Image (cartoon, rainbow, N blue to C red; front, side, top):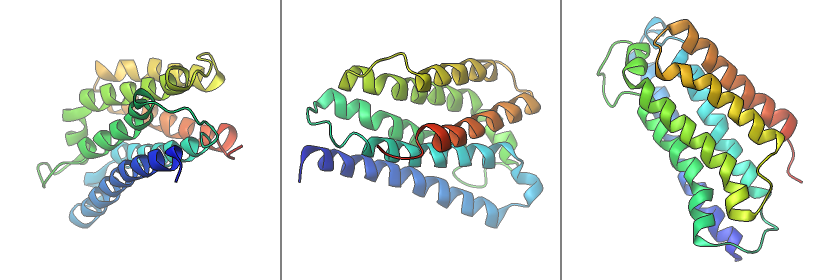
Length: 185
Protein backbone atom coordinates (compact mmCIF):
# COMPACT_ATOMS: atom_id res chain seq x y z
CA UNK A 1 0.00 0.00 0.00
CA UNK A 2 1.43 3.38 -0.95
CA UNK A 3 0.85 6.67 0.88
CA UNK A 4 -1.80 7.81 -1.60
CA UNK A 5 -3.90 4.68 -1.01
CA UNK A 6 -3.66 5.29 2.72
CA UNK A 7 -4.83 8.91 2.30
CA UNK A 8 -7.67 7.87 -0.02
CA UNK A 9 -8.97 5.48 2.62
CA UNK A 10 -9.28 8.33 5.09
CA UNK A 11 -10.92 10.58 2.52
CA UNK A 12 -13.28 7.80 1.42
CA UNK A 13 -14.42 7.24 5.01
CA UNK A 14 -15.22 10.94 5.46
CA UNK A 15 -16.98 11.14 2.10
CA UNK A 16 -18.93 7.97 2.92
CA UNK A 17 -20.06 9.49 6.21
CA UNK A 18 -21.21 12.63 4.39
CA UNK A 19 -23.11 10.61 1.80
CA UNK A 20 -24.66 8.51 4.54
CA UNK A 21 -25.73 11.66 6.40
CA UNK A 22 -27.41 13.06 3.30
CA UNK A 23 -29.13 9.85 2.25
CA UNK A 24 -30.32 8.95 5.75
CA UNK A 25 -31.73 12.38 6.49
CA UNK A 26 -33.36 12.80 3.10
CA UNK A 27 -34.98 9.37 3.45
CA UNK A 28 -36.29 10.28 6.93
CA UNK A 29 -37.75 13.50 5.55
CA UNK A 30 -39.45 11.70 2.68
CA UNK A 31 -41.05 9.26 5.12
CA UNK A 32 -42.21 11.86 7.62
CA UNK A 33 -43.27 14.92 5.64
CA UNK A 34 -45.61 15.79 2.85
CA UNK A 35 -43.98 17.04 -0.31
CA UNK A 36 -45.26 20.60 0.26
CA UNK A 37 -43.35 20.71 3.56
CA UNK A 38 -40.11 19.66 1.86
CA UNK A 39 -39.89 22.62 -0.53
CA UNK A 40 -37.32 22.84 -3.31
CA UNK A 41 -34.25 24.45 -1.71
CA UNK A 42 -33.15 21.61 0.58
CA UNK A 43 -33.51 18.79 -1.99
CA UNK A 44 -31.64 20.87 -4.59
CA UNK A 45 -28.89 21.72 -2.12
CA UNK A 46 -28.76 18.04 -1.09
CA UNK A 47 -28.13 17.08 -4.71
CA UNK A 48 -25.35 19.68 -4.97
CA UNK A 49 -23.69 18.43 -1.76
CA UNK A 50 -24.09 14.81 -2.91
CA UNK A 51 -22.38 15.57 -6.22
CA UNK A 52 -19.75 17.69 -4.46
CA UNK A 53 -18.85 14.77 -2.21
CA UNK A 54 -18.62 12.39 -5.17
CA UNK A 55 -16.57 14.92 -7.11
CA UNK A 56 -14.17 15.30 -4.16
CA UNK A 57 -13.40 11.60 -4.34
CA UNK A 58 -13.29 11.57 -8.13
CA UNK A 59 -10.86 14.48 -8.39
CA UNK A 60 -8.64 13.18 -5.57
CA UNK A 61 -8.11 9.95 -7.48
CA UNK A 62 -6.33 11.94 -10.19
CA UNK A 63 -3.60 12.72 -7.62
CA UNK A 64 -2.38 9.14 -7.37
CA UNK A 65 0.77 9.94 -9.33
CA UNK A 66 1.72 12.60 -6.79
CA UNK A 67 4.27 10.95 -4.51
CA UNK A 68 5.29 13.70 -2.09
CA UNK A 69 2.61 13.99 0.61
CA UNK A 70 2.78 15.85 3.92
CA UNK A 71 0.50 16.18 6.92
CA UNK A 72 -0.65 19.69 5.84
CA UNK A 73 -1.49 18.20 2.43
CA UNK A 74 -3.59 15.53 4.16
CA UNK A 75 -5.41 18.18 6.21
CA UNK A 76 -6.15 20.21 3.09
CA UNK A 77 -7.18 17.10 1.16
CA UNK A 78 -9.81 16.08 3.72
CA UNK A 79 -10.96 19.59 4.66
CA UNK A 80 -13.38 19.82 1.71
CA UNK A 81 -15.10 16.49 2.47
CA UNK A 82 -15.20 17.35 6.21
CA UNK A 83 -16.92 20.66 5.46
CA UNK A 84 -19.31 18.95 3.02
CA UNK A 85 -20.19 16.47 5.78
CA UNK A 86 -20.89 19.33 8.18
CA UNK A 87 -23.13 20.98 5.58
CA UNK A 88 -25.00 17.70 5.07
CA UNK A 89 -25.57 17.44 8.81
CA UNK A 90 -26.71 21.04 9.26
CA UNK A 91 -29.05 20.89 6.26
CA UNK A 92 -31.57 18.65 8.03
CA UNK A 93 -33.17 18.94 11.49
CA UNK A 94 -32.20 16.35 14.08
CA UNK A 95 -35.79 15.43 14.86
CA UNK A 96 -39.12 16.71 13.70
CA UNK A 97 -38.12 20.19 14.95
CA UNK A 98 -40.11 22.02 12.31
CA UNK A 99 -42.87 21.16 9.93
CA UNK A 100 -41.15 22.84 7.00
CA UNK A 101 -37.66 22.09 5.72
CA UNK A 102 -37.57 25.56 4.17
CA UNK A 103 -38.14 27.19 7.60
CA UNK A 104 -35.39 25.02 9.07
CA UNK A 105 -33.09 25.89 6.15
CA UNK A 106 -33.57 29.62 6.70
CA UNK A 107 -32.90 29.28 10.43
CA UNK A 108 -29.49 27.75 9.59
CA UNK A 109 -28.76 29.33 6.22
CA UNK A 110 -25.98 31.69 7.36
CA UNK A 111 -23.97 28.87 8.93
CA UNK A 112 -24.62 26.64 5.93
CA UNK A 113 -23.39 29.26 3.46
CA UNK A 114 -20.33 30.14 5.54
CA UNK A 115 -19.44 26.43 5.49
CA UNK A 116 -20.05 26.39 1.74
CA UNK A 117 -17.68 29.33 1.23
CA UNK A 118 -15.06 27.61 3.39
CA UNK A 119 -15.54 24.40 1.36
CA UNK A 120 -14.95 26.31 -1.86
CA UNK A 121 -11.84 28.01 -0.45
CA UNK A 122 -10.54 24.61 0.71
CA UNK A 123 -11.03 23.24 -2.79
CA UNK A 124 -9.42 26.26 -4.44
CA UNK A 125 -6.40 26.30 -2.13
CA UNK A 126 -5.76 22.55 -1.78
CA UNK A 127 -3.74 21.90 -4.91
CA UNK A 128 -1.74 25.18 -4.93
CA UNK A 129 -0.77 25.02 -1.24
CA UNK A 130 -0.40 21.26 -0.75
CA UNK A 131 0.88 20.19 -4.14
CA UNK A 132 2.35 23.30 -5.77
CA UNK A 133 -0.19 23.53 -8.59
CA UNK A 134 -1.01 26.95 -10.07
CA UNK A 135 -3.63 28.99 -8.21
CA UNK A 136 -5.09 30.75 -11.22
CA UNK A 137 -6.99 28.14 -13.20
CA UNK A 138 -10.41 28.10 -14.86
CA UNK A 139 -11.80 25.85 -12.09
CA UNK A 140 -10.68 28.28 -9.41
CA UNK A 141 -12.11 31.27 -11.30
CA UNK A 142 -15.51 29.59 -11.53
CA UNK A 143 -15.35 28.88 -7.78
CA UNK A 144 -14.81 32.54 -7.01
CA UNK A 145 -17.82 33.44 -9.15
CA UNK A 146 -19.92 31.01 -7.09
CA UNK A 147 -18.67 32.66 -3.87
CA UNK A 148 -19.78 36.04 -5.24
CA UNK A 149 -23.24 34.54 -5.82
CA UNK A 150 -23.38 33.08 -2.32
CA UNK A 151 -22.45 36.26 -0.44
CA UNK A 152 -25.91 37.89 -0.85
CA UNK A 153 -27.50 34.79 0.71
CA UNK A 154 -25.77 35.59 3.99
CA UNK A 155 -27.79 38.80 4.30
CA UNK A 156 -31.06 38.05 2.51
CA UNK A 157 -33.83 35.57 3.23
CA UNK A 158 -35.71 35.92 -0.04
CA UNK A 159 -36.83 32.40 -0.93
CA UNK A 160 -36.58 33.01 -4.68
CA UNK A 161 -33.06 34.41 -4.46
CA UNK A 162 -31.97 31.39 -2.42
CA UNK A 163 -33.73 29.05 -4.83
CA UNK A 164 -32.08 30.59 -7.88
CA UNK A 165 -28.59 30.59 -6.32
CA UNK A 166 -28.98 26.99 -5.10
CA UNK A 167 -30.11 25.99 -8.61
CA UNK A 168 -27.12 27.78 -10.15
CA UNK A 169 -24.78 26.04 -7.71
CA UNK A 170 -26.25 22.63 -8.60
CA UNK A 171 -25.92 23.39 -12.31
CA UNK A 172 -22.32 24.58 -11.87
CA UNK A 173 -21.41 21.37 -10.03
CA UNK A 174 -23.05 19.32 -12.78
CA UNK A 175 -21.33 21.31 -15.54
CA UNK A 176 -17.97 21.14 -13.77
CA UNK A 177 -18.35 17.39 -13.43
CA UNK A 178 -19.40 16.88 -17.05
CA UNK A 179 -16.99 19.26 -18.78
CA UNK A 180 -13.98 19.77 -16.52
CA UNK A 181 -13.73 16.72 -14.26
CA UNK A 182 -15.60 14.17 -16.38
CA UNK A 183 -12.66 11.85 -16.89
CA UNK A 184 -9.63 11.20 -14.76
CA UNK A 185 -6.41 11.68 -16.70
